[in-house]
Image (cartoon, rainbow, N blue to C red; front, side, top):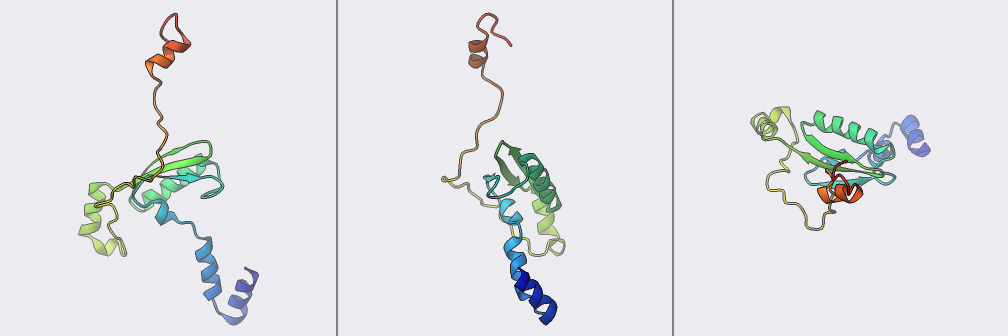
Length: 137
């Protein structure tokens, strides 16, 4: 890193600095690509999962993508989606979205993708098992 800064400053050669920046850049486009994925704290990101998810949602919104996501203790599950209206807008006005490629049309989830843990209300049987006398909480 020091060498890249020295060469940039003294020789006005910014190629090493650009290479360093590319290595340090977050793969936001990959995280916001179609499909569901789990991003793991300590590997993909370092801040608390809730904070990271909030930041990633802001990045998705800036790109016109809706981010369905959930923070867990040590990870974040994300599933980016592109609304039909956004897709139509991008196709109708390509000059506003240079370099945009439609990655959502025809996207099929991989069978090897990790399965997102289910989160929802408890089943009636688990509630009655804890409170057998009343059957309610």
